[in-house]
Image (cartoon, rainbow, N blue to C red):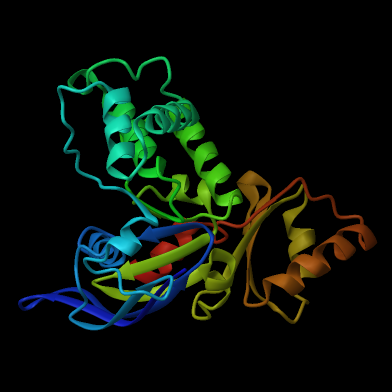
Length: 305
C-alpha cells in the first residue's frame, strides 16, 4: 500500500530522512528510532504533509502530497494534541465524520460505533478540556478511524495510557489489522512494540537501518552471534556435550545459577539439536531463553554497537 523509493527530505542543511527505500503492506508495522531519527518526517511524507526533496513516496500508487484522494484513505494520530477543547469527545468525533463527508445522521451513527470500539462510550460526553492523556489518545484513534481508512498512522499512541488501556488499545489495532488495514505505529517503548508486531522499520540519523520481520533482521546481524541461556542441574556436563557441536562457538558456565550461556551463529541448528541431545544423554533442562531474540537486542546491535 505504501512505497518509498530513495526518498529523502532535507530541511536546509539538516537531513530528515536520507535515501529511504521500503514498502509497507497490511498489518501492524512499527516505526522505530531514537529522537531525531526521522520517524516524524517519514510519517509526514506518507501523509502528504511534506514532499520529498528527492525520490518518491506513493500511497496506493499515488503521490500523497496535497492530494485529497489519498487523504480520504488515511487516518492519522499525531503525537501533539490540538483539540477544540470546548467540544465533548462525541461532538468532536461527529464533526470529524462530517468533515469526511458523512451526512448528519450517518455521522452520528459512525461516531458512536468508533467511540464504542475504542472504549470511550462511558466518557465521551465530557468536554475535551477535562480529558486525561489516555482519554485523548483513545478519542484521537476514534477520529482517525471514523471514515474507515485503509491506512492508519499513529505517532506514539500508547503515551499516557495505563496498562489496561494499553492492552485495550492493542486489541483495537489487532482488530483493524485483521480487517486488512495497514497500520504504522511510531514508538520508542520497545517492549510495547514487541507485543504489537514483529514487523519493524528502524531509522537512525535519517537512514533506514533495517526493515521486515524482527527474527529475519536478527538473523542477518552476523557479527553478533546468537546467545542462548540454559538452566540445568549439571551445567558442566551439559557444556561438555554442547562444545562438541560444530555450530556452537562458545559455552560460558554460571555455576551459581546452575546455568550456562551458549553462542552460536546457527541458532536453527542449535534449537533442532538440543532436544535430541537432552533426551539421548538424559540431560534435564529446566529453562531456555535467548536474550537476543527480542526487539531491544536488535535495536542495540544495529544502533548502539
